[in-house]
Length: 462
Ligand SMILES: Cc1ncc(COP(=O)(O)O)c(C=O)c1O
Image (cartoon, rainbow, N blue to C red; front, side, top):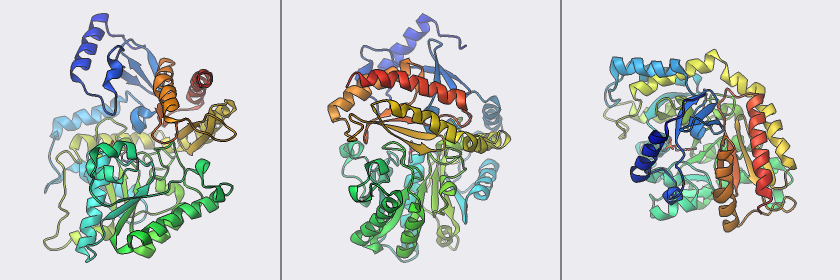
């Protein structure tokens, strides 16, 4: 059990938080008359709030805590590194931790993805890949290529460049005009597939991939730099790729000389039972962007793994990639990443996900008997549960209903019931689950039971 904070400590924290702290993507007014949720401690698959109440961390924080919470060996690796060399930049200098980690990642990555450019976050990784693509094409005499294709409803980050790639109109609109070049293609939500391919997932995948080709042709192949795809698309509620989809996309990219960026900020480092999501689905991208799970959140780190050919124009003469950020490849973060990967190896976390993912799916699929559950989809330890008003017609909720259901009820009710997960309405309403990779059947059962109780109550409210 966690030691709860005292009443006075809780009151002091609440007062300071309400006066000075600004939460991300959060309606701050919702705390005018309510307590802000404060998480104070984590252990294994669970976290504890200020009152000492325990929650199953069904979202691994924010798709981050792969190895779970409270791993002292990883924390100590960070502390040791801070004492040895807390900081030095990767601008002109190297340090052993970045070198060792780059070497380890290159060995793990598929094909000729051998060069690692570190960042400090996922958005920076996504944006760095775009900048690399642009400078690369300018260097090889194709200066017109600047556009980037990405899928409808996909989230690729929030900095202005990454936001231009993100496919969620609602979070882009206040920041328009964004850098030019972001173009949308369809996602792979088979549950909502167009009628003419709704009965055949393979045909759906062919259609969705061919739409990428159609858009490249429409935009002008000479203007397109890259296509950004997640192995399993998070936003919208975990859309796995249809069979053959990525192979076809790879062919299309090759045909038009367009780079394929696998945005694995969520899907890398075991989320799908492999170090990289592209390994699970058998394709070789030109760039992998990563963050989150590389350190399991014990320190911030992101980066991109880049194919040898993209490095070539920068490896001779006066050329350099004109890009960098202060904290990229921070020594403490790199040391933590190494210790995190050691845990993966020692405990065979990929093996754990592969051995248990069917059980996870089967347990979640039990919820399919509830009238509000339309679809359960995902892969590995990464699932979305789409909520519907009418199961037979797949009718979704309108904006008001969604607001009442997700924000008015579900988010609080799930938290109160002891489960951290995400009720998301940026596409159709979904509950998202992405637990630590150490979870086993007992945790799946706990998730299912909490969800069953709360979703059953939700059904009576619609
Ligand atoms: C696929 C994907 N790309 C990029 C990002 C942005 O990462 P960050 O929040 O670290 O900037 C995210 C964040 O969730 C993501 O899921």
